[in-house]
Image 1 (cartoon, rainbow, N blue to C red):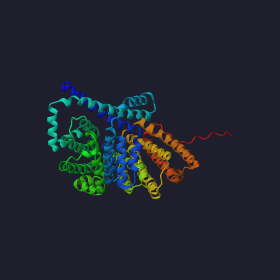
Image 2: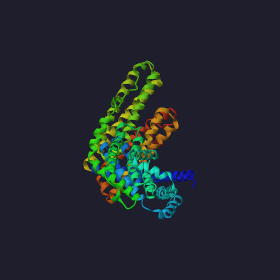
Image 3: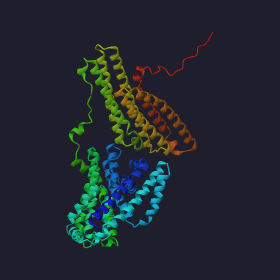
Image 4: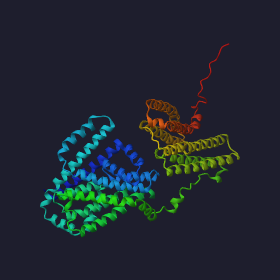
Length: 555
């Protein structure tokens, strides 16, 4: 076969492998994504529990990088600590090594069965989760098929005159082999795919063990670089998790590389064939790294905080700036515009408070509770400033429309402040009580709360858009949501009572908290709806009262 055709065949096999690994991961995320994220959020047991959770998620997702990005996002929100995130990522790397071990077995006889089952589930069923299961099965089949293609593509290379020279050069220069593998793993964005390729090359006799062993270590370092690269745009607290993992993995790889040079035939006892030896070496390296690194996650947390401290402007950025322009008080239109900007910032802070409420309610962690209360202090300050600003503006000469608009803005500031109090007092108090009593919602009750919160968050977006645009249709949609939330509250209340009648212990234990949370979210939504009232009132689309007119009584 012509060398160019061999390279095309090999490149096609590698791309199919990358796509298949991604296909499995996206199928799992779409089918069970929220549940998997919940596992990482709610895992107890300290760093050991987080490491176990990270390993389990990496096996399911076939990606340690995906677990690292999840952990970084949760650390940014204050849901997990940096040390817990580091432990989860260390565990995820070990889980990823187990995936390589599983896929290294000769399972090619299963390819037709997996293709048939996966395609049937994906093409013949309409249910979303069933289709995603089919997608995962197809992805596994394509992984096995791509590995067979890699073996077929490398078959002619065994007769090449150049290959022994290249293999001998890599075997004699472990540092170069290490660096090449690290770059390849980073470029492919998949350490699983890279290591499967190396194992396949070694099993086929294309790559000697002496050259492949340093490349396994290089692929581990390159895999750690992927998470660092993908989180480069995140805030420093989140980036410290993959950076800490990179330090652990880099130090471990260098030490292992030195041991490979000092010990005679270090991989000889790790398996019968070259491919099995490499895979077992990869699993052993990650297991040892996990065991040795786990006790030092707290120390690494402090080290990364020292090496990459928050810049001064980031530290002071939490001190908010007001949009109120007192120099514009003599020009009412400009003054009202600055008051509206300040109200919008107040709304954005409120949105940032409401978004993590369910995570705080689920975990009841002190950090999350403290952050919400600090944000409520900001809401209260902005509320006070807007009221005083509008009061000062009213001392001047205003038109009737300007005076009315000023009162509307002050009224909305009151409503936003009330929403902040509901979150910081009612919802946070319920979260603290639930954590103190060590209670858990029933699965059905928790799903109801999650769906209700998601609906209120969507209405928050509409409300802020209406505040900026004054769009009539969006205002009508927002007001219509009030009736929807009222009906949801009734439905959830009825379901909750049914669970109490059935003797659901979790529902009984959390009954008061569940009812208070539903009521609080409904109150937040009712206050959000009031953003639309001035727009609908100006258009003559808002009734002054929901009461029906009394019937006339003839005498």
